[in-house]
Length: 291
Image (tube, rainbow, N blue to C red; front, side):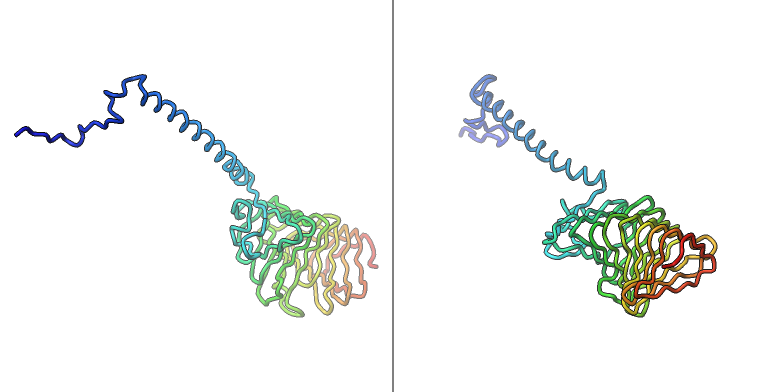
């Protein structure tokens, strides 16, 4: 009996047999055309991906994270609240520029050093109790809205940390919201490593809590305006710490502004406007009188 068995790997398809489709044949022409279509599609897909990747890469290279607040909550830690899910990491610049209809971010679990924080008008940032939001050396806070440190006034240390030389600028207000008549460390601008903070003209620090950095130069306004509560300028040490005022320090609305012990130079104004100013510093040099 003849053997009709043909090995599987030698079976020729009537459609794809090279014998039926010699070079230049129907299949060959189809294959080349198909390959061109695939290649063109790949190029188009690559271009589209390049656009997306370019945006992502730009965000990574520039270390810029932009708040869009569409993650279903207002938590800073939710990746979906950031454009392209580009959550801020060490060295990032965070931009909060959403319109007032989008909830301001709540910093809920954060220990990353930012290179910069920009808050546009009608926007803001609040920090939960116990959170440390740190600005790194050479960094800045450009605040044209409102920052609230310890929004719930919980009794746990809550800080805006100053790590190196940092500028606080803009036309906004940074509100310290410490435990009423209690733990001033619960809302603090603190030294996170040789803190050298300059507050520029037009910006305000207010509320109740404390400022405790190695160097603080003020061209703006520091206002102890929390009725019955204290805003303290506390010195890291009395030997190296220097505070200077070229703007305005004031106590208003029944608040108390207290100067800790340490060198302080005043070429601006110190006002007691329906509030109290308490001086404990032995080294205060006044270039301009109290009002």
